[in-house]
Length: 334
Image 1 (cartoon, one colour):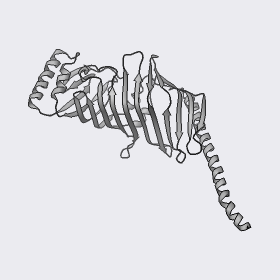
Image 2 (cartoon, one colour):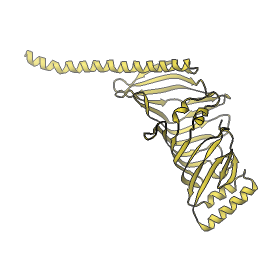
Image 3 (cartoon, rainbow, N blue to C red):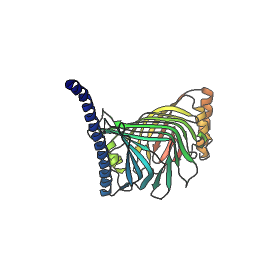
Image 4 (cartoon, rainbow, N blue to C red):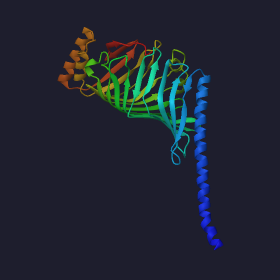
């Protein structure tokens, strides 16, 4: 009987020991995550930024680990903006603590240097970060029914679905691969010189290589992209697909900023039926008469011939050009 009782107790003893060990591990992991959040906030403050929150509440025991961060506020040392929200959740993968997921549980107010505020909201807004031995492995963001609303301006920007992923390029040190996919975009207002395209874009997809990516973290006061540009930073568009009004094309190109911080670069966009595109451009309210006549002639010619065209889009010297025709001046990005 004694031996039989011993064999009955051994499984229960092991189960209780494992359960107690899991309880200790879960709370230790939660405590370590909370310490890292506090250390990050202190590090940001020491660097001149501001990162605050009122309290952290633990959820998910025993299988999940979710930290509810209440009244979160962040303002970088440089950049001229600040963000605050009443709640953001941090999900820690229990069996892989190097993988964390941030989930916005309330609208986010983003204030700029001029004190104008853009309110960001979504049915679901999730950002994830996975590291390997402290280095970035992959980062991503996904949102459903994303809305950006600036009360000081007319209209709102909305996107039904947006997915973006960033990872180091395994074939080139210092480069990052960015994949971007946005579906059903509604612009807050017509784009200058492209008014005839409308404010509805069915999709925008891009596969981009970011050269000298680490330099993006070295923002200078009042010149956040200056160090990246000075290091030779460029964006290489391995594929750019845009379905917007009369434009439905997939192209390639590269771009960056010039010394005046204006867009600079070139794209090649193969267009199967360019007639409606040139016609829409010609009917824009901000096109000068010479360009309007030239665009109208191109529209008529391609409508009759039915030929395809590879459209050359160039930003140079502060001017946006299509097929060598000046379309609009380009102001500095910031």
